[in-house]
Image 1 (cartoon, rainbow, N blue to C red):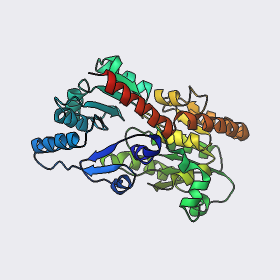
Image 2: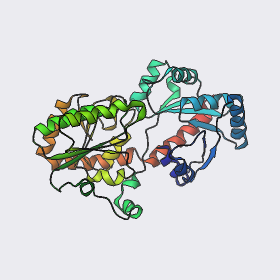
Image 3: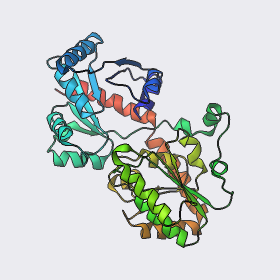
Image 4: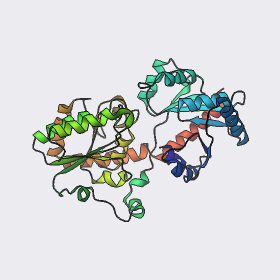
Length: 360
């Protein structure tokens, strides 16, 4: 999402530079985003790094630092001490899986920022209650998505040919093509989807399901349990594990429906993208999913970890696919208006102005 912000910053009047400590898979993309990027590596001496960071921030006349991780917010707070420069921190996840060092850093910085930003109301309420935070300094800024990447005209200009997933997988044009997107990590619950697929198979429904997302080395059980379950129940001829893909905007519109299960997502970008693509979406009733679907108005909510409830709702979809498709088209319009990258940047600019003028 931050990459989309940088790519759309200039045309939306956001004056920013990027500072990063180490390389990543998207480094080149960020460098080419249109925002000036500066690498300031942290090697072995923290004091030297903080001095360099302070010098760089002052030299570039930065008035506000917006950190994306607690550790970077802490570094910025120390480096900017006495300068009057404001520090903001966006929380992209929960603290459920924080290790000891991460927990210490979080507690050190969460009350020392000039404002904390959260990607949903439910996430904001969680942190505010757990850490007894000043409600005036806790703000909700929904994630934004550059929806132009889902427009067919842009996809055609970016690709010599839009890949047909059915052709790639050797599937007929008959039958349902279903899917879910997201790496296999503890925050998600793909295993409930696997149990649902077993039930769907028992109903003799003609379908093929694709999991788009990588096997993460730090939590291999999340992937392995799903794969082994599908293998055990003879589902591998109906289920494909595609790994990480960079053509999601072209793949989503090809699905007849999108299914998702979460344990504690903070926003659900994949769900929003699927809704924006105009396809029926089924997602469990985790608080934030109820929030982004307007309590189920723009998506089908099923009981968390309840594959039977999901099956019951899905069978209703099969009885009247046209009505669900009409609802999905309505959802796409709502989503594109509420969660666009332009709206996100506009909200950021207002927050920056508010914090810069009013916070001490």
